Length: 472
Image 1 (cartoon, rainbow, N blue to C red):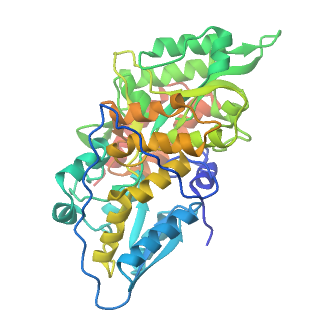
Image 2: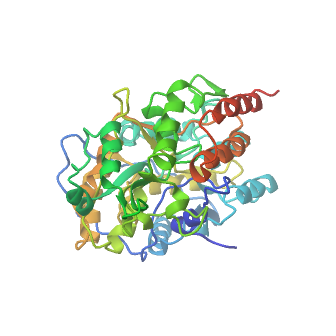
Image 3: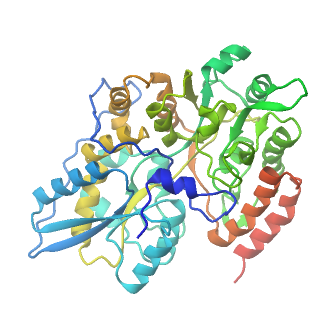
């Protein structure tokens, strides 16, 4: 079986194919246990929840549970399985790496009665598995075993987002917090006389900054763009739609596409005009190694752009390989209606409904998600946000300790500011998410990657997507 680390998976997740499932973005460092020296909790953070989960009695006989998760973190996996083995000597946890057929293969295994007990999922995968009736509802287990303090320690948008909107099934417990943020080259901004973006940064500031940061040669040809966005799909672009006051999916009706609203079309046009008219934003294909390639932080590290929108997990790429310039990251700009909008995922661990050992699968999942050891080591390894509020100060210190020569506080603070803000939301899902993506992606690609289609094309698109979702 082919196995992919999260970085490998995302490099293959081409925007041109339109079929890739979005996941948290992270690098592939050597898998070592991360340091986690605690720091004094910030005033805005709650005290760490008392973690004293109820422990199930050991099973009568030998039990094996299968764990599906990301590769590239062997030491963390071994530590987790060894710790669980010490608690339950007659339970063996076997690890299975996520492959390039993630989701589809597991669904086939579920139907055949032979799926992993513990499933790493995200927005698309978990929704699909839940809608096929293949995920165990974790609500009764949560009510039985987790305290209110432990529940409150999870980020609210993820915790609520893991309840399926139609069935009320709790699909999983949060794994880590992926979200979109903006990286900026401090040296380039200094040279252009551009103020560093912060929590007062607006869409108008961003527009002006892009113009100042765009570099042209004597003939007028762009040699370096002000920035590039990696959002031109039906999931990530939702942060921009919301920033302008619009939506992809009607918040009150999952069968209705509203990408044709005035607000949504204004967000689309802002991007289209800056790519193809003003040439201050690069189209992803203009700075990718080849058309349709997954856009990592390479264009930013190679100075093709000075500002780049990308997932928070990619920060470790810059921490491992110093790009040779000072950089930091920031939160989303305030939109034209005076509001900031963020986009995050529901990356999680769930349990297959057909598991023959659901009690032991729950005990292992609970250990991963509610106790500190795995979460802190994982977060420092990938330099990406752990799953709970009480871990935030420890997370920051762990990253600073792991990358003492390259990590700076202003490269991490934006992650903490995002999850502490009130503007984070998960992606909206259509009733027929798969079919809707197949209609939406080609239109967005023609607008932003090819440049031969006006924004008004989404008027017909919205009708088609709505009709698809409202079919009997």
